[in-house]
Image 1 (cartoon, rainbow, N blue to C red):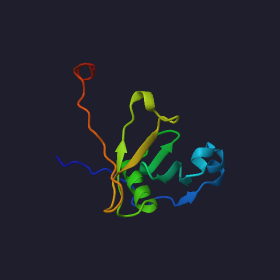
Image 2: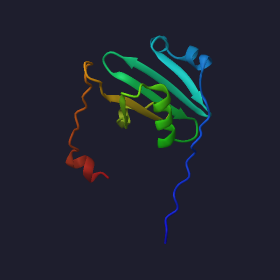
Image 3: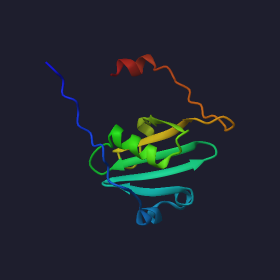
Image 4: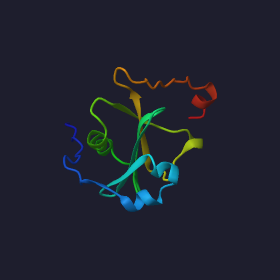
Length: 129
């Protein structure tokens, strides 16, 4: 029995700036982030000195696919930047539950590196699964 390969689009809708959404963002985010749309997806992209690049991608009815996230990353972020998808803690969720966050995890030579510390899960967290 052969396994069918999942079909993912090789063509995506264009990524366009979303000036209306940009104006609705809180002022502190408006000043540093850029708002975009790609079909039904909303995208925020920003770069700060302490965190580096951050991209959030959301949809009203579903999670964005990995292929969509990769396409957005490839179109909006410089090629020498590495991003990772971060799963936030239950206490630090986005307003839209269908949001994925990508953060810069590696900086090119000469720039400050961003480090993530992996924590070992506690026994009670493992038992609760």
